[in-house]
Length: 248
Ligand SMILES: C[S@@+](CC[C@H](N)C(=O)[O-])C[C@H]1O[C@@H](n2cnc3c(N)ncnc32)[C@H](O)[C@@H]1O
Image (cartoon, rainbow, N blue to C red):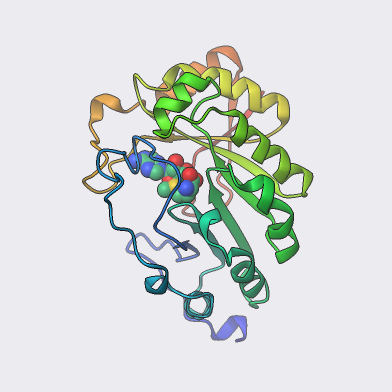
């Protein structure tokens, strides 16, 4: 389809529909306290059967329809997208779609060691790796399955070695991992990897959200700025959700 023929969809604030998150699987190997807490997503929780998930063909068709409505960027997510066995086939299909400018992937990173090279070859350019703490005990409490940070850091290394761009996502929950904000900023600053700090959000009814557990963007900014001065960066495009800063 020609660019000029595309229907552009905007919301009531005139922001164009450009990004689409596509959840490729509902299962996850983590039980993060702010997302899929173990008390709710326990051993008896019924996830979708494999034949209930959208196939690669169905997802590619959906994305094609959304591209016609103006979507330019797809973010593959889940659950944990690296648990989806045919993820490389999906990325290969999406990479071939004209009009789709960008494909991202959000993952907890533990399976990147085995996946990174294959995903890069399929056409993936970059990954956002979720990591909520460097400290093993804090990370174990956050992820709910008792895993330390080393497997995720190895996943990040594998992604970089495969030539993928990497950003790190950290959800901050007050009283749980807020002590990690400055150490993580310093660690990833040294590696030249952008760190994206995310306020604990009220997503649905199963993650026990409470404002007393929120560390605001302003508080996070002040903590880092006191140690490593920051300056704001212009929005990359109209409607961008993140506020971005660079180290002075
Ligand atoms: C739901 S996860 C799915 C992908 C993958 N399993 C991962 O760990 O990145 C996608 C993103 O949503 C974030 N997220 C989940 N629950 C959240 C919450 N309550 N508040 C803020 N961010 C949340 C995660 O930290 C992650 O960066």
